Structures are given as C-alpha cells and as structure tokens.
Image (cartoon, rainbow, N blue to C red):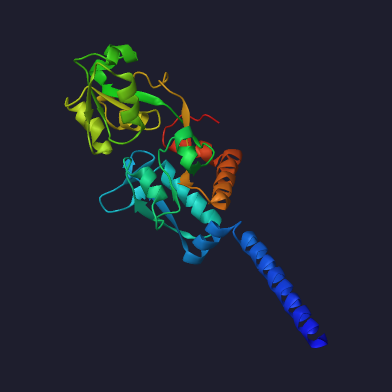
Length: 274
C-alpha cells in the first residue's frame, strides 16, 4: 500500500511538473510572439514591400525594374530601421486587399498612395498618416476654367477616366451619376489619355496631380487646393503584425520630428500638412 501511495504521489508530481513546464513554455511562446514579424524579417535579411509601381510620384516602377517615389523612400527608411535590405513585390489596386491577406504571406507591408480608411482598418492594420491626401482632378489646361466643381464634371458630355479597383473608381461611381465613367487599366497612362483628348477628366489625388502638372504643360489641376475629400496616406499590413506597425509608426514620428518628412514633401512637390 505504501508503494502504491508513493507511485501515485510521484505521478502527481510528474503531472504537476509537466503542467508547470507547459505553462512556462506557453508564456515563453507568448513573449516571443510580441516580436514575431520583425524577427522573421531580420532572419530573412530583407523587407518584402508590396507596391503598385503605377502611382507617380509615390511609387513608380521603371521599365528596367527600378522603383522610385515618396513611398519607396519611406519603405527604405523602414528597412534601414529594421536593419535589412528591401525587395519589392508587385501588387495592384484591384488585388491589394487580397494580396495583403493571402496565404502564404507574400509581403510584409504595402506602401505607395494607400489611403487610410475605416474599411481597411476593419480587416487590416494601417499606420499613422505620413502624407495628406484628397480627391481632385486632372484635366487639359485649356479646360481648367470649365471644371470648378463636381457639378461641372457631372454632366453627360464629360468623360471621366479612372483606374479600376481603387478608391478613385469608388468615388467616381458614388459622386458622378451623369458623367461618362471610363475605367482604364493602366493608372499611370490616364494623364496622357486626358492630355491627348481620349478623356476629359481624371479622378486622382492631390498627391498625384501636382507631379503631372509639373511634368506635362498640357495638363492642369484646377481644384488642387480645394479637394473633394480629406484624408491621409499610410502603410498597410495584415493584422497580427503589431510589432511591425509600432516600428513603422516610430519611423514616421521620427521623420516628422527631424524634418526628413518635410524634405520629402518638398522633393516631390507635395503639400506639407504636418
């Protein structure tokens, strides 16, 4: 009987020890999960950045494969803070959300002209804003006086061109019920389509319009200082990456504090709103 009691006691102690060990292990795992994304990126040695590459001057991919733009420089700052290199992964406006949420994960974050919205924040994470944004238009310079309001644009004879799948198309469908809405696949080609007379107006952003006006004298942005909407552009990523989100927000805050964000605004001819 004494041996049986000893055996039972030993079994209980062993079980308690196992439970205790499992508990400690679980706690250790939870602790490790506080920094899973950054550790994974550091182990990989590079930050994977999803970007459309069709949005001058925020994210543009040249024919040789090189990327440039405001958002690209932001991504480089983030990668430098983590201490790794960078690799760009092609995404598109129609597939952006699906690409962020896809399994297996194809990139760590997305950047370049992505407006912060409540809808996106319901299913994904978005950083603090680093660039003021708002809907405006591009038109031919000769027609600048013709378009001074949404009412001027929302007429049956006006051809409005937008890129598919993004907030520009959504805005046009919601606010222009009489105009002819033309969906054009290549966002970066739409300004030239307007300049050549294949459309009258492009729905765009105050972050994009100035670049085209500065680089193509045929174009104008008559409502640049009176955008239809007001918002901010941020960095997009999937949920569960809170450590990466926190790091991105630190980078943005530091760039605001030390003046580098203002310098980027000036470099790309954009309005500084901070």
